Image 1 (cartoon, rainbow, N blue to C red):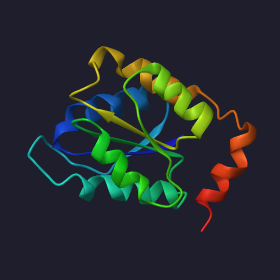
Image 2: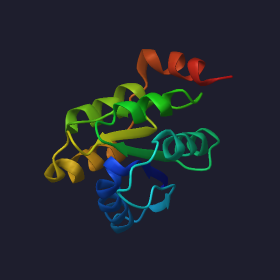
Image 3: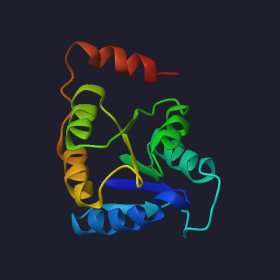
Image 4: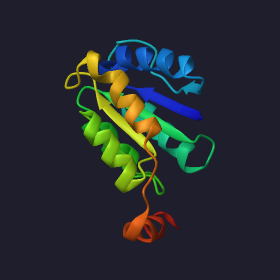
Length: 143
């Protein structure tokens, strides 16, 4: 998969960890920044990730911050994005299976580093189940 990734300063460390994990799994990764733990305005790095995924330039995106909440809000303002905040393997799995989430948001301050790999695997490997909500999700995404 081609994956876009971006963070603010509060998610920078996890972004660097996830970039390595994604590359090790054979995924192509494009880093939209930021490039340090120096404070920045998160929308400057999150919105470009969401827009690139929405345009179809990337299969999925990952955004990171302190809690992941603000990042998800910014990403979800872009038509075609279904960004979920994940704090557990179960939220990653159900977000993919039930909501066809194409962007993952993680908060470095609220998710244990120990859980990162399992959350990433669940989000990458869980297929969308479709079902009765599939048509409705697609209708919401259409312009």
